[in-house]
Image (cartoon, helix red, strand yellow):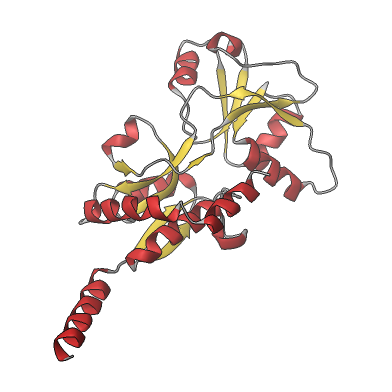
Length: 245
């Protein structure tokens, strides 16, 4: 009996030594991640559930997006929670397997007839975005060629002002996020925005692990294996489905 108990104690000790407090940075982007919603958002919930079998705990700091990017890039956090893939970011982050489709769309007033199906549809239009928003290469090239024009602001509330007062033709955001924010800010008003079409990019969001964090590769490998199992959990599937109702 003693050898069995000794082995069990050793296993528990090694498990507790390996367990880490995983620190991630992100912005306030409900309903995907935010301190204002249940479980700090659906993506935060997924990450917590994925880390749980590994014995890791999760601490989330909600920061301005530009600061979250910079601090994680510098290795002050294990990961950036909820980022889109860009070629530039590959130099600083390891990307998990894709998590949720949270792609940005070009949003218009419902009364407008604008449709964006090809890059040429953006010609001569002005698009409003949050500062440091990850743009598709297609949109970046159109802006560089002065075919499309960009207006950057600091908040979603300012995006609403841009489109309401016709300072821009379109705003670029995830439709679910935009509708959530609008209904919270203007609960008595009718939501009169609609998608003119998705941006020309992979809209999946990821956990982006900092390449500057020591031992990060082991954590990522274990995380990805756990993620495959967690996504088979019926509770998680139901939570995701409820989000997109």
